[in-house]
Length: 201
Image (cartoon, rainbow, N blue to C red; front, side, top):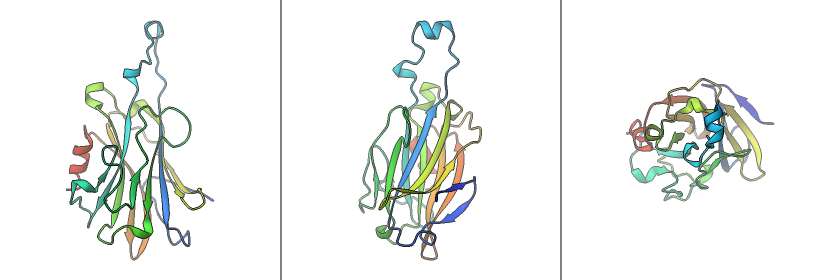
């Protein structure tokens, strides 16, 4: 049975799920309904330009630090060089049900030097498009056992993130030989993935 997490909560993955080797990190969000009036309906207020393009990424950290730029797995670098963290591709709108983007992590094979994998989401060109997470609703992160497709846990980000342009959703980390997950849910005003990555350098 899936565990529903609150902000700041930590849970063991491998201890509670014997034999867990590989997980799918599913991330989802929806664009909040616009309060468009007569003009927006007349001119098609939800044009392609106004779609919010959220991008999920994973930072592989060594002793809590991002050492190499190749340790950022995102739409421009879909596969980590170790082959253990793979981004399943970019979703440009967040439309539809279920996960909008997925990242797979082969926990059993992640090289020993990596102790933490931070899962983040930023809004592409947020400043230029005047977009922020106050325009997003139903954001969540969930972890699924890749061997049987069963959901292990889910964390719904229910806070008001108005003014935030990026989000640290959660962390998968190694502690005393076991893998754990921390529900972070921290909003930031970083304008790009690069700015977000700088927090860990």
